[in-house]
Image (cartoon, rainbow, N blue to C red):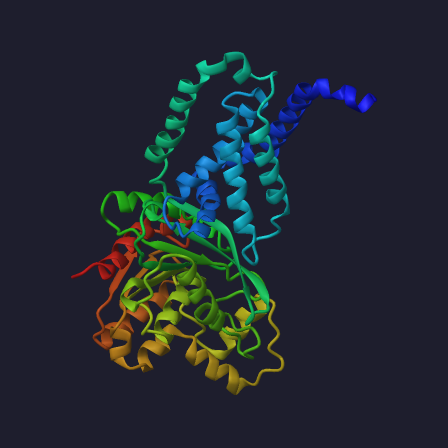
Length: 428
C-alpha cells in the first residue's frame, strides 16, 4: 500500500520534523529569551524554585534561553542532536512543573513539547544530519561545547542585578490587580541570604516604572553597591497612580490604598523575595507625592521603618480648602463628605501637624533624611517640617541643594538616600 511505501522516507520525515520543530522553537520562544538579557533570564530561571533552588536564577535562565535558541539550531542541523534535545526536554519539564503552580498559566504547550523531546531523543536525528555525517568525531567536540555552555554563563552573567517592572498581585482591599516593580541586587541570584528592603515611592503622574525609567534606579543602586556606599538591598516600587491617585486611604475610606500597602503589598513582597522583615532592615523613601507617602507611612507606622527619606515632599494639605482643591484637580468628588470629616482627615495626613502632635519617642525611633531643592515649589512645607523637628529636638538630616522639582535633582539625591538607609541596615 501507498502508506507502507512512505516508510523508506522516514529519514526525510525526521529532517522535516527537525526543521519545523527547531525553527518554531527558535523563532517563537528562544530568540526573544536569548536577547532579553539578565532581567529576562532571571525571571525565567526563577522557575527552578520548583526544585527548591533559590539561587543562580540568572544562570539557569540563560541556559534555558540557550536550549531554546542555540539548542533549537542544533536540532535543525542535527548537530549535537541528543545533547540539544535533552537540554530542551529538561527545560520543558521545568516549565511543566512551574505551570502546575496555581496562577502560572496552562502547562499544555510545555507538556506536549516534553513528550516530543522524549520521543525524538530515542528516535535520533536520522541520516540527514551533521551528526550522521561526522559520526564518532563529534563526541569530543560536543563535550567541549557543553562545558563552555556550562562555565561561561556562570562567570559572566551571574552577578548582574535585575529589575522587574510589571509584577502584579491581586488586591482584595482595592478589588483590582496592582502592579509593582522590584530591583534585586547583583548577588541576589547567586546567594541564599536575605536582604534589607527599601520601599521607593513615585510621584504624581508616574507609576511603578517611574524610578526605573526616569530615576535610573538600577544604574544608581549598582554603582552605590559596587563603591561600598550602599549595602545590597531589595528595592520595591509600587504603583499608586492607577485607580485613585495617592498613597493613602481616601477620606470616605472606600479606596484604602494605605491599608493595601501594609496589609497586602508588604507581606506579599517580603514573602515572595528574600527580604528581612524586621524594622531595622526596612526603609521608605519617595519623591513629591511619594515623599508625602514616605512622611506619612513612617509617622503612621514608626514601628515598621528604621529610616525615612522624603524628597521634595508634598507634606500634606495645610487646610480643608487646600485639600478640597487638590482632590478637585485629581477628579475626586467630596460633596458627600462633611467639613468635620475632612478636617479630621487633614490633621492625620499633614506631616507638620503629625510631627507637632505625635509622641516624640515614636518619631525619634525613625532616622529622617529630608531633601528639597531651593527652587522647588514645595520648599515651604519641607522647611516647616524641619523646623518642627528642631523644636522637638528630634534628630534628622535636612538638605537644601541647588535645584527644583526635577528628575535631575532626584537622581542626584538617590545615591545619598541609599547610603543613608544603609547606615541603619548595618551594625553601628
